[in-house]
Amino acid sequence: MIEDKNSARTPLSELGEFGLIDHLTKNFEIKQPTTDVGIGDDAAILDFGDQKCVISTDLLIEGVHFDLSYVPLKHLGYKSVMVNLSDIYAMNATASQITVSIAVSNRFPLEALEELYAGIQTAANLYNVDVIGGDTTSSTSGLIISITALGYAKQEEITYRSGAKNNDLLVVSGDLGAAYMGLQVLEREKQVFNVNPNAQPDLDQYTYLIERQLKPEARKDIPELLKALEVQPTSMIDISDGLSSETIHLCTKSEVGVHLYEEKIPLDPAVISICEEFNLNSTTVALNGGEDYELLFTIKQEDYPKIKANPNLTVIGHMTDKNDGMGLVTRANEKIEIQAQGWNPIKKEG
Ligand code: ADP
Ligand code: MG
Image: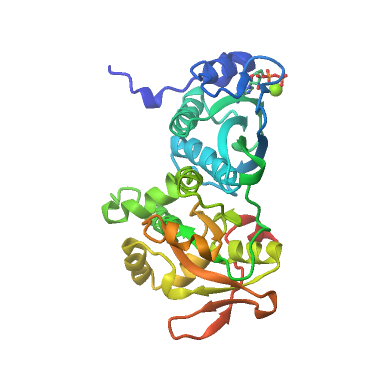
């Protein structure tokens, strides 16, 4: 009989905690010059020289932040890393290390964790970050993943949410709304599957949307691009909860208002057509969808010529006086107040 590798189920108890950590991390190599000591001692040692160290952490809980019935573990590992690196890039910094902590119930065999770590390793290699430690423990219900990302930047390059000024241009990378619509497609297929487990979904036309949901890419390229163009953004944030709520964060922290133009919001054609299919307004989806992991930032007007030809960047508005409020200028040239619906699942419970 040919053994199906995917059906092998090695209980974690066969390895013990230390055997498991060793097994999962033995292939991680140290590549970053800022990593002095990685996995293996009580703590890692980093040396950032004269740069500032930037740190961000995230916690992902099964059933709240991800659903393993349609998220493959490898993708989950990859995405967990992206979510964190995105926060480092949003500071206009270079990501260099991550730590990975997991809590697993005995429902998960070794092979499941190998898949998770394969995704983590792929992400770490592609984004050139070292895995320098973590923690491993058991959980009574499901899987919990916490990743901490570290990075570095010169003091003068670090970009905060609070630096936007009146008249600065508001710029976004990539396009918006696709990850949210990918989730809608996956949820719909899950319902279909629950009714008829033999149904073979044809998801080809939704590839871009599903990829944006399951395998997002953090915008490592944007801080690099801005440096190359000699543009120092005045404020920046990554789009995890949706364009509205991130725009509001920038305005509130910077004490400015905004005019955001509906017609400028970048949408992929796949988002426009799926919104028609689901009978949703694509602007609403782009504003509130979330999980795009694009970067939203402001630049000085005088820097506009440096970025205007770049297909990765779209100017979607400009900052105004705080007293003007935060407005979306619609295609019909009406100004409506931007509201944060957000997407963060925690808000649903509150
Ligand atoms: P301690 O008992 O001091 O917490 P551990 O046995 O948990 O030490 O960890 C031993 C080493 O393995 C440390 O370097 C730790 O950072 C690393 N480590 C533990 N769990 C993980 C994990 N899930 N992924 C990556 N590294 C890990
Ligand atoms: Mg430990």
